[in-house]
Length: 280
Ligand code: SAM
Image 1 (cartoon, protein in one colour):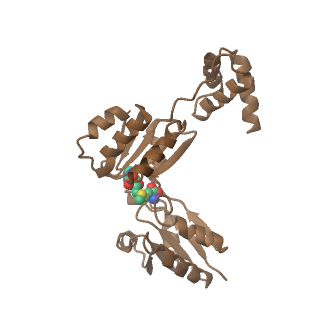
Image 2: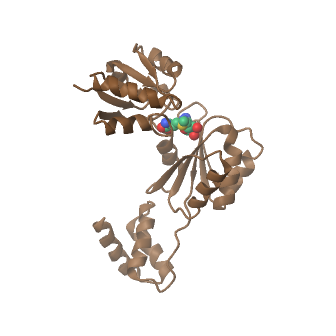
Image 3: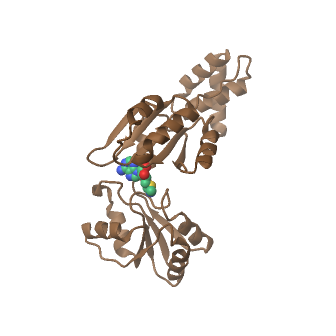
């Protein structure tokens, strides 16, 4: 009978975040597929786990993925880990999960910390709807095209970035999106954890000289919703109110704002908003 691939989240800094279930998953697997076997050896040593490791990373994932799938199909259980956080999220593993899914191999998760949701939760920005943009490309053209597409994005946007590229990324975000609120979440769950809630212009000034240290997640405010002009229909106003509600304000406050912007009566917009929410 075919085995299982278990995707196991590991700490993003604090080993105390490694759950008993995650430890059990590694201890019970027949083998562990790891992004960097040296990093995973340290984690295993800390928790007193001994297990055969197979390296699975960006440059060997094609042939290793095949080998891992064959071993699972032959009945072995594999645990997949990356260096930190959830595998497959800006980390190797996405393709292995897809490969297993395609071959009908059972894939389960032992969820753990991930920098994207941790930073979002601490950002103080709307969390109701967000997009994860990962790392911006270092290729100038793709980077420009990516940022161009984000200009009108109304959802909160989350980016990963390496410290030595932070200054350039802040400058590019400011140029493409204009000044916006941003939260820079640094060294999450570690001794020097810090969340700087500021604007892109201020952050670009602060880090313009370089010198950023540690790991960073940038959480950037979405574009202001394009308000329907006065004379909008109730449906349009309700759609606007729905966007506000999804950003985390109460239905009543969302209706009040949308009514204010469209010149319609709040009660009318409120009822249409509730109807929309029920439909969803
Ligand atoms: N799979 C991981 C996850 O689920 O969070 C992400 C791996 S990605 C290769 C590494 C990036 O995640 C870093 O460059 C940084 O942007 C972010 N990151 C990881 N750990 C972090 C931490 N403790 N504090 C802030 N950002 C972190």
